[in-house]
Length: 317
Image (cartoon, rainbow, N blue to C red):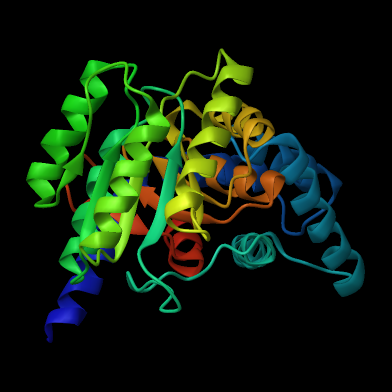
């Protein structure tokens, strides 16, 4: 077996293990939903609706999935309960495709310009700084020159934590003293990265969502200053969410989308939780693609989100 086959096998095993609790929860509920039934009827659909809602898929997305299945049942006249697993897999996969969630395979970046700039947002405690460290590791591992910017200057712990992750990943971290202007840190980071021909720049930001107006102004200022160095920056605004909080993560996503334009999502802490269904609902309701998922505490436990692999793993018997 070649190196990449081994890597893909390990990645798949990590995904299967990380989604284990969600899968067990969904399947036990599904079994109860179809108990004693041979075909998909109104009772089964009502039970299925409850399964999806209690699996943190979210009410609006659940209604959309149920409606699609109702259409199939009406069209095909007879759909057995044994087919339900496959139908769910297909409908959810199509839903994720419509929301531009891709089948991420590698850590390549657009080649039309460099560095590629990722501005990372999210409330404190969701694993934002940890995700940045893991992203830096993955990009560095794929042969890219990475710079990190510690623009969450309101918490000394955030700067210190990012510095530790930078050391672990083997990438430089640009920082200033606590309380410094975050936009100034972003400017220094992009200037240094540009001068040193970096491929990727990842900027950490403060997560004070309780002060929406202040956060909005701060992010606007950071973006404006970035454009003085690189007119196209940022290339990506990545929102990090804690998947283990279920619908609370969805509420955070909605609030952040009101503060700034979000272009991609990273859902962390999916291992050890039964709330993995939140990935489906958040992507559907925000119309923003899930790009990364966190499946453990190790530096290598951040994966590119692969729609097909995620759905296959979730509904594997």
